Structures are given as structure tokens and as C-alpha cells.
Image (cartoon, rainbow, N blue to C red; front, side, top):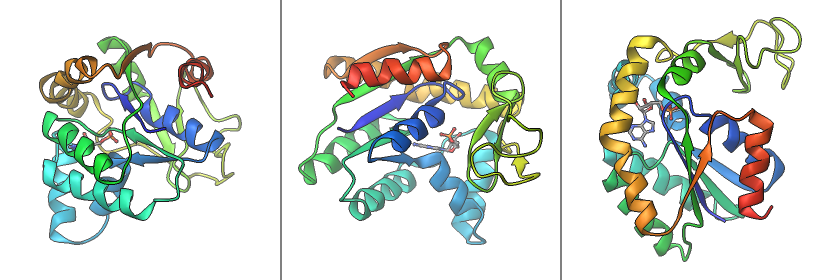
Length: 216
Ligand code: AMP
């Protein structure tokens, strides 16, 4: 099964993708994670990407389509893909359709994760993650069980906040979502792939709802 998690920044796409990956042999493909990895490199492209991401703008379609194409090629054994943060534009959506088709695959479901904007601001500004394993936390809704220790990998003092998880960048990201990404809701609705889901639900309840729709 190949699914897309579609939603504004902070909707919980990464958290749900990781839960699905943990429980099934599906592969999470997060363009945000791939870009964060490339921005840490000292290459010219890495520096340009870092600036764009910190402002909360979108990187070019060409860059992200190349990243996804490479990942589809190198993960042929995966039983399915969870696209997290991709596609974000109509050009990317068309490219994904073509790429999947060329591999004899197709899209199964697009989950539209719905959350209201003010809930998103709270989520984003309170969010932090473990720099060792990537586990995501929230200072109020989902703190680590033991202060300063990661629940998942037990690393100590490894918590960091993303450079774009502040209110200013968030507002730019939200604008990019409404301007460039929200047309995908109509696009996938017309293709009869869209399933709306309440993104305000508790993490584990949302996971169960997704599994039920996937028949997993
Ligand atoms: P995310 O981790 O999905 O919230 O993405 C973080 C940032 O990476 C975004 O605000 C964009 O700057 C960039 N980004 C991630 N995925 C894409 C994409 N599919 N298209 C363009 N830019 C992206």
C-alpha cells in the first residue's frame, strides 16, 4: 500500500508516518527529513536549502522530485511507502503519479489531516525532537517520560528544536500550505483517493483510525 499523509505543518504527519513504519514493513519517505540531512552538508545546494527551509518557504520541485525518485529506486523491497510532506505542489503530485506508474505501483489512500490553525501554532512552538533518533515530543502534550532522556533511544540531553519551528516561519509555512499544497485536496478528491481525518485526535487514536481505514 502506498499512502500520502497530507496536512499543514504540525498536523502530525511525521509522528503518524513513524508509527506506521514501526508497525508494518512500510517505508516513510519524508522530504523534510531528507532536506534537513542535505542542509547539514557543506555543499552549495545544502546552504541554499537551509536558507529556504529556515524561512518556511518551499524548496524547488526539481530538488524534491529527485530526492523521492532516488528513494523509490533504492527501496524496492518496501511493502509500501508513506509519503510524508510530499507532494506539496500540483507539479510534485503529477510527478509522483508518473514515478509510481513507472515502477508498476499506484497510490492507495491520501489522508487529509485536518487541524485548525491556532492548534497548529501551539503544537509547533512546543515541539522538539531527539537529535539522535528523531523521536518527536511536545512540551505539554507529549513530554518524555524522564526529563532530558529520550524515551525511544535513551540518549541524554539530546533534545533540539527545529530552526523553522517558531511562530514567524510557521506562518510562512502555513501560507505555503494554503497557497501551494491545499489544491492537492481537490486533486486527490477528484481521483477518489482522499480520506479526511481528524488531526486533533490523540496520537494513538489517530493511528488506530488510520489503520482501520487501511484495513491493517
Ligand atoms: P517538513 O519537515 O515536512 O515540515 O518540511 C520542512 C521544510 O522542508 C518545509 O517548510 C520546506 O521548506 C521543505 N520541504 C519539505 N518537503 C517539501 C516539498 N515536498 N516541497 C518543497 N519543500 C519541501
